[in-house]
Amino acid sequence: MSAPKERATFLKQDDLPTSWYNIQADLPERLPPPLDPGTHKPMSPEPLFRLFAKELVAQEVSQERWIRIPEEVLEAYRWLPRPTPLFRAYRLESMLKTPAKIYYKWEGVNPTGSHKPNTALAQAYYNMKEGTKRLSTETGAGQWGSALSMSGAYFGLKVRVFMVAASYAQKPGRRTMMEAWGAECLSSPSSRTKFGRSLLAKDQNDPGSLGIAISEALEDVLADDGAKYALGSVLNHVLLHQTVIGLEVKKQLELLDVRPDVMVGNIGGGSNYGGFCLPFMGEKLSKKQPIDFVACESAAVPHTTKGKYTYDFGDTAGMTPLLMMYTLGRDYKTPPIHAGGLRYHAMAPIISYLINKGHMRSVAYNQTEVFEAAVTFARTEGIIPAPESAHEIKFVIDEAIRCREKREPKVIVFNNSGHGLLDLTAYRAYLDGKLEDLPPTKIQYPAIVD
Figure 1: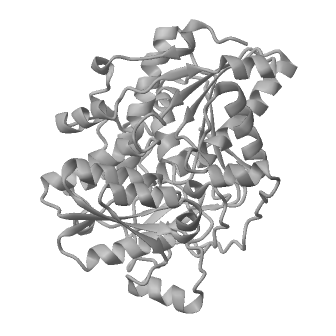
Figure 2 (figure 1 turned 90 degrees about the vertical axis):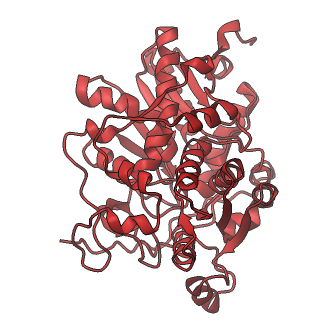
Figure 3 (figure 1 turned 60 degrees about the horizontal axis):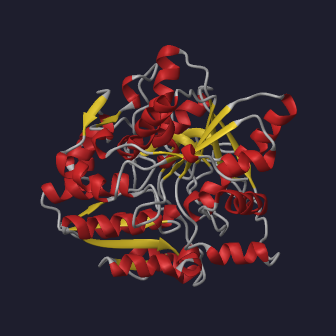
C-alpha cells in the first residue's frame, strides 16, 4: 500500500490568507444578542472592554465579511509555519476498500501541536498593541494554554493559565510546555481565587471543568488592572481567526479540482471546526452548495446532541454574559474523559445556530470507539491524532464504509486539528484494555431567559 506522490498538497507562504472570513455577514439573520448577566437584557459591547482588547470586541460584533489580518500577525503565522498541508488518506482508503476520497487538513505541525495558535497569536498581538501586561485564561486539554503561552512569549506578554484539574493530572507534558514558554500554570479549581477555594472546600479532588477554569480566569483578571482575558474557543472572534484553516483548504481543494461532499470536525467549544468549515458554510448559505457538515462530540459531554438551545452562562460561577447556545447547563459535571478539549458544557453561538437551523448536524461517540478509530488511523496514515480529532476520524471511517456499501464515491474532508503525542497515557490505557466509556452525568438544563 505505497502512497502516491501527490499525497500532500502544499501552499506557498504567498498563498497565506490576508483576511479572516466572518460568517456573520452571510447568516440569514443576526445571531441572538448577548444578555447582561444581571438584567438579562441585551448588552452593549462596552462592558467587555474591561476583559478583552477593544479590537477583539469590535470583531466579536462585526458584520463585515472580511477582516484584514495585521501584518504582524501574518508574520507570526508564517513563523509557525503556515500554510499547513492538506493530505490525501490513501492508505486509510485502501484499508477500508472504499470508493470515497478522504482528505485531511493537518494542524499539528506547529510548535504547540494544534490549531490553537491561529487565534492565540492574534489575541496576544491586539493586547500587546493596547498595552496589556498580562493575559489570564483557562485550558482544558492544555492545547489552548500551550498556544497562548507561546504567543505571550512571542509578543512579550506574561500569561497565567488555569488548567482543568483532570487534564492537569493526565497531561503533565502540557504544563511543562507552558512553563517552558514562561507562563504560570495552575490546577483548576485552585486556591488562587475565591471561587476556586469555595469549590476545594467542598471537594479537594474536584476534577474541574472548563466552566470553572473560565470563572477563575475572569476573577483573576478583574483583580488586576493590568490584565486582560483571552479565550480559546466559543466566541465569534475566536472562530473568525481560525478561518485561516478553511480558507487554505479552499485553495488546496481548488488546486486539486476537488469539491467536498462531507466536511467533518470535532466540537468542544467550536473553534477548530468553525475555522475549518465556515468559509464553505458561507457558500452553502449563499450559493446553496450541497455539503454535509458534520460536527462530532463526546457522548460523555453531549452538548449539542442532548443539550438545550437557550441562553446560558459560559462559565460556572455565572460571571459571563448570557449567550444563546446549546448547553447542558453551567453546573454540568463533565466526566474526566481524555479528550479534555471537548469537556465544555456549551457550544459556540455560531455553531449552535447552524445546528439549530439545520445547516449542520452533530453526532456523539464514546471514547473507546474513538481510540479504536485513532489507532486505525495511526497504523495507516502514521499520525497519532489528538483524542479530540479522533472523534471525527471515527465518523470518517464509518462514512467511508457506508460509501463502500452503497458504492458512493464521496469526497470526505476533515480537520485533523492536533497531534496526540502528549496524550500517550490515554493511548496506553486503550492499548492495555483499561480505557472506560464514561456516561453523561446529570443534566441540569438552564431556565429559558425571556
